Image (tube, rainbow, N blue to C red):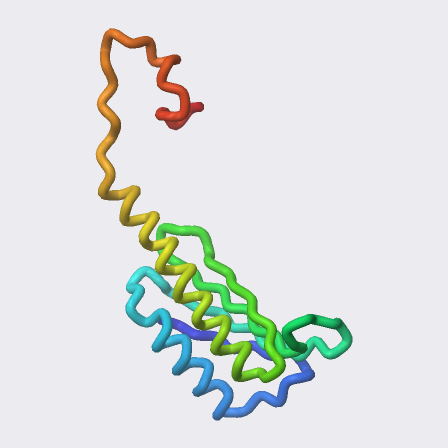
Length: 127
């Protein structure tokens, strides 16, 4: 899994920060084989007022066979926003992968040949 860390000019980026972000992402979503890449964006939005803090972390996971999964977290401390986003990403991927697995395991609903197809509203792809 590829992990990209991006910061704006308000964050002092250093090797320790990159390692911490990578460790948190790996521990949170490393078990998902379908995740190919995670992009992490960090910023300090001091000019905007947020109830839960100025430090902002956005994580976007690129998943094979699924739309990208994006989460956001604000916190008073940068490390808390990173941890919060990592937890949210883990829960979002659990949910997304569960839906994918359910969809792949589910059998088609058998249709009665005597009932007109129009009466099966919502059970076909074209409605």
